[in-house]
Length: 335
Image (cartoon, rainbow, N blue to C red; front, side, top):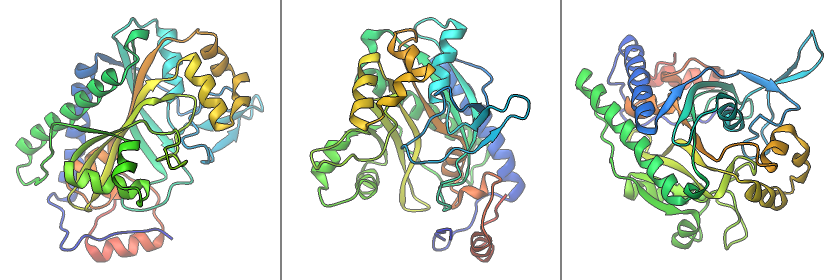
């Protein structure tokens, strides 16, 4: 059963086709803003990878990939969850210098997602990755990139509102940073999601830092795979969504693991067996560049900037009968 929230008095500010036009404008504008802000070039990316390569992102470690056997070879291919690892390998192949990087359209199927206003089994995001010098593997580098992305989003909103003045969305341009331990200290009796909502409601645009490792309570703020982000130098960009009255994560990103932090995080997470996978072997041998990167939700961003109540208003996906029934009664038009 899906979980659908219908905001009181909700009414879309754009018609069905105006929404489609606005989605096109947002995606075209933001891609240009992002590439200039972070010095990125567009590349093509795979929809699926070899299941034995270690390239697929296993997210928090419990999600099941959609897989199929290739008739010609008998090998198992997996539909990507994200391109967190593939991008780093691609930067090596393309011989990108320090300070430059890539972005790509990533389309994925996440079969284990909960169906609600913010989540779908279909995922579309801009995956990006940039080569950095080892000395720049710092929180300051991460914070700078996060602020640049927030600025690119806000500039995109400016153009959108020039084209569609009826769009009521207002975003705070300056990002407030907070670590997951600081959140736990502020709200010790709350869950991770509850802490996010309380803090983001107050500060509107927030960068939540250091996700994955255990806090003083002995529990992590949220799950994070051990083999792409360095848990001490990663974060999520969140905006306060006035329509749904909740924190909306737009981007998950981080300085990527070094050979040393990969080894440490594999041990901490009990995933030492991954050392033998091709991607991990290359990383542990120092054969891959130092990078920073992340994913930026395309449908999430369109939903936020257009003031939509359901992600199905900005993407065509699978929804169960209950979702269709509730949304139809509420005047929420699903694509």
